Amino acid sequence: MVYNQKNQNGRSAYDGSVSFNTSGNPNSTGNAFADALLGNYRTYQEAQLDPIGYFRFHQYEAFVSDAWRVTDRLSIEAGLRYAWQMPTVTLGNNTSNFDMALYNPSKVVTVLPNGTIVVGSGDRYNGLAKPGDVPSDQVANVPNAASPAVAALPTASSRGYYQSQSLWAPRFSFAWKPFGNDTTAVRGGAGLFYDRPEGNLYFALVNNPPYSLSASYENGNLSNPAGGSASAPVPWASMNALDPNLKIPKVWNWSLGVQRELGFWGLFAEITYVGNKGLNLIRQPDINRPSFADLEANAVGAKANTNYLRPYQGYSNILMRLSDASSSYNALQMFLSRRRGNLNFTLNYTYSRAWDNGSGNGDNLDTGADWHDLAFNYGPSDNDRRHVFVSTWTYRLPFWLNRQGVLGSVLGGWEVSGITRFQSGAPFTVSGNTAIGSRRADFTGGSEQLSNVGQLLANNSVAWLDATKFSAAPESRLGNSGRNAFYGPGLQQWDISLRKQFRLKGTTKLQFQADLFNAFNNLILRNPATTVTNSDFGTITSAAPLRNVQIGLRFMF
Image 1 (cartoon, rainbow, N blue to C red):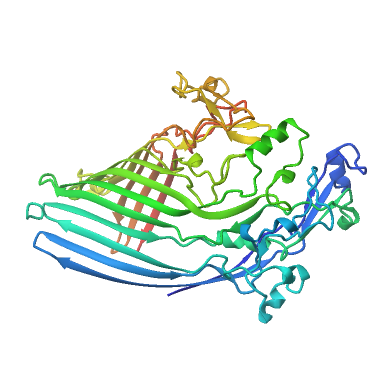
Image 2 (cartoon, rainbow, N blue to C red):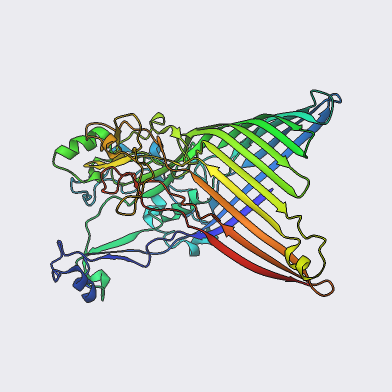
């Protein structure tokens, strides 16, 4: 059984947010900095409170497993895990959630082309639901508990907005000795595993109206922020939401490999195929983004405020967590190790491909893209690294081990170890700014890299992408380049440690250790600039830290 509790504030703008702008401010001096010195603001916003959610959840789990030695050569292990997982709730029920099914077109507020709302039109909280009434013992913790707006909200079907779920997770594995000896083994297995949606999916819901409201003023002075004129009502600011049909993310894992002791020099080798399939993965699109057709028409027309074009009127961005993304991973993994002698090492090489349409639970899509279109966002995962080689090694220097006196004490017994990594580059998406927002760029095809790729340019940047192959997509369609379709530079890094232990009097010892991170000072480049409409597009302007040396002494007694 798991019981979790966390008291988390919403981190609203309760300390105020102010801007100084000479445009449209009758009190302006004509200089924004001078306005700031005098306190003559253009806009001032402040949340009425920093709400606190007392978040709690329970989870119950149990499992059964059994191992069966079928023959002297074959062993099988199987199991089944069960979990009852409830969503996170708040003790005070002081959150709200947007539910598409509760949005009533007959109660829509009137949004004007300039993005403001007609006072008194429609229901400002249309589509919102609450988990339930505020319990009597929590009224003191929920300042807006008695407000008519809170009382009028419908109650969601679940206190955690999505249903508690029963999760069944089978597991199976086997080990087989094909030749009847202990030098070779074939191992494989498969299993289903579930995730727990993290707390950040819930924490921001305490900032949603009507539990957390804010005030906005224009053209006043900071000596009396509320002395300015009240701003015209506008749609609610960007809010987070949970899909009431959310399902718990799960992944199927499987592997099949051969292990063998090679019989010389203490070597052990392994080659394995590893795969997994992720289902019900969480992403966070803006379900209230205008359609591409509306954005395109607006770009050549009267150019109304974006909030005027949104399907759910009265709201701006509605960032809803949906559990409809998926992933796949397939890899060939090879391993070689030496476990005895003065030189020990492991060599690991992975050739893999990782694809998905949601690498993180906050992933979104291009401006104008239909948030239902999962295929549009399917491509290499953010963490896709096609080739990875990692070696760990330790060498105990055999010199002067038996030498007596100062020479043996100083030069004998040294040990050097390290980690060596060679790795393919990280994927990235090329985008371009357009009149209807930033979207994926167009790509003409062929090689995206310059002929002088990796060369240092006059402005101290590094050449990478051929800018002539890319352009911003026209307003009439989405760009033709894919998500994460291009790759940045790989890396080569050596981390080395040198250490020795000196015996002092009695049982006291002194250990010296020097650690060199990126010991050979390799230039490890980051990805290039990826916005085709910017002047630095296609060049690399940043790199990982260069060599870092750390020296330490440890006295043991």
